[in-house]
Image 1 (cartoon, helix red, strand yellow):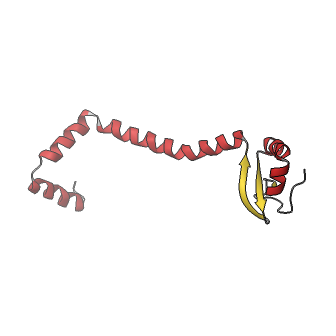
Image 2: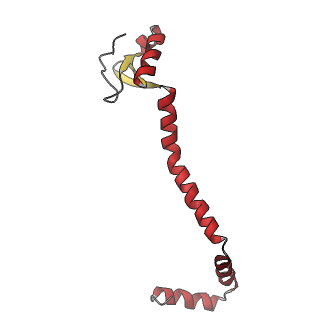
Image 3: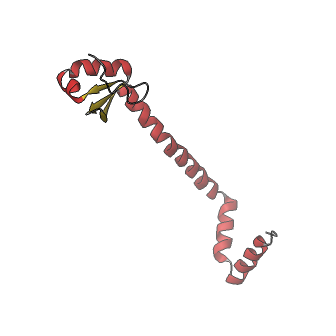
Length: 113
């Protein structure tokens, strides 16, 4: 099966026409398994991409990595809030009078807190 005139979707992804994909799906699937993916074109414009399972799983793993990092950061913050010192500070904050909170805010603004 020949790669179509649309050359490549990205420099490393071969392209086939929608007609080629329909009429020679088995050959296109083999190409996907070898190349990792194939861009499917219609009127010389990429309309879809067919990916191997390996490429798909790689994309999903990359997409989920930032979420895993955020989840780990969140878990660390929650863990730090569970310390005795953090609980005391939280209790003191909620027990503080408006005047005491105001003084603390001013001291922090002046760099003294």
